[in-house]
Image 1 (cartoon, rainbow, N blue to C red):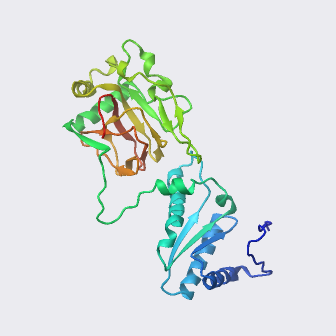
Image 2 (cartoon, helix red, strand yellow):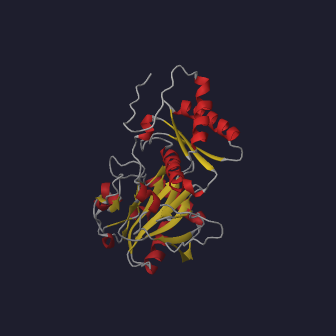
Image 3 (cartoon, rainbow, N blue to C red):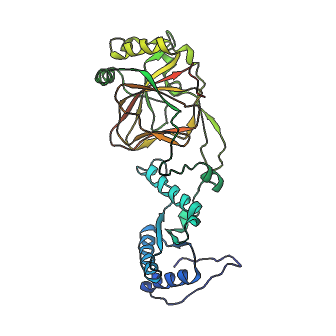
Length: 335
């Protein structure tokens, strides 16, 4: 049995020799009697916590017919390498959101089943969690101004064919030690093949990597305007025609093919300039989020410019690679 220390001044009760089968009934009776709107049940592991929580919920429903019970599991934060890290993080954020808004319904009990380890694991600050939420309501209009569809369109079949041709020449690469990032650069500084290697394939950005919310800078500063030469190896592909047309309409920096692998995500970050996107291969679970607005960009040959100067993220919740042609745009301004 694990030892539990109750802080001084906290109301508590220790019941000896209570059969395990009776704990759910006793807990439900105490919780209903005392009129709690938030209940946190702590067990030694998540499976036991889930079983106990479901039993308590059943007893509460019988003791208070008509009461709404919102049941959550609150597990420890997963490491970034965990295959379900994104889904588990979303589940944890949903619990925190429920706690923020839990008192908005009179006849509702929030029931959370968790473990000691999960309770002491890192979470966003209350103020930061609340200000970063977007509440959607029926009939509400969303502002998608940070996703601007352009008046040019390319042949998606030719784009996909060219992508396959590129893969026969070059594979995706990125900075050593950086996971969930892959790029094939289509442009370089004239005569300088090293300008697309290592960290120069990614470039400078700003992020808030931990619970402090402090912004930090990552990677190398890039002179985007210097990347004017289309790499010779790819000049016989459809991407050369795409590059020529785009260059006649926009002032471009680096032009890359970017890979986002299945069930992976970028960091929450901002870039120095907007980005031009042409989705080549995608799926409904591949989503881009700018500020608080999420949007799927279909692979139909359309060209989009996105406001990457705001904090944003891209994730691939599907089971196939997400492939975009992405260019830095140096002369596009958002309001």
